[in-house]
Picture 1 (cartoon, rainbow, N blue to C red):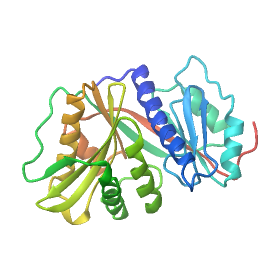
Picture 2 (picture 1 turned 45 degrees about the vertical axis):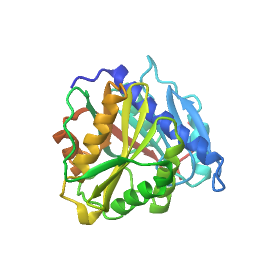
Picture 3 (picture 1 turned 90 degrees about the vertical axis):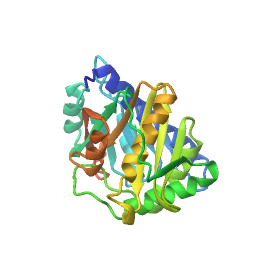
Picture 4 (picture 1 turned 90 degrees about the horizontal axis):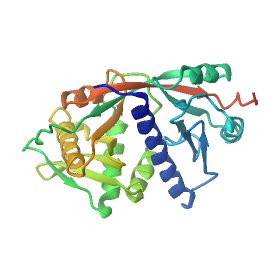
Length: 280
């Protein structure tokens, strides 16, 4: 599947906007803290707290030049909270951005693959597994199932961001329900809860944000069912593409490609250590 730079920019900046939407919700929570949302080089940079999975900078490097105005202040903000700043940089972004980050002391810490599905052919979900839309009242159930799955990883792939603390993962997953375009899903085997997943629709793109299978139900097609249910939903909603980020060589990537996803590009993870925030 061909992916031009403008499509990569659209995907990356949408992911940044999703993080910004969550940050705006967190800002008004009792635990909100010193939330910051910035625009740098066309991308979106978000800080909520150290170790948060949405504290990141995405979508930069797609302009005619690289403009890092405001990055000194952002780095200082992260460092003041003893937090490392993570920049996810697309392989289709300008090479000058990676060079500039390396010169500023950023270290490379692995990759993600971004995969896309054209939604032209979607298979039916396995009959043995039921997938239903989660109601607002089931937000905590979706979050708890994903956290239970993440507590016992089912992968030996490497190269992504560290897993967040499970309480933070549950909290951010529950908050997602209040973002426009969000949909949650619950999978059951018989009457038992087997897994859950989330979807966010933005301007014709369906972003598969997270999914997990309860350990005792693995290898029974739960992820296949959740993928197919979300693909069908995205097609019915008029989306032109579904996208998902996975660790290279992971079980998640294998599952996605089995269902018709193809690699669009890679993201490289650049990290500025909290102890290295001197202005450039």
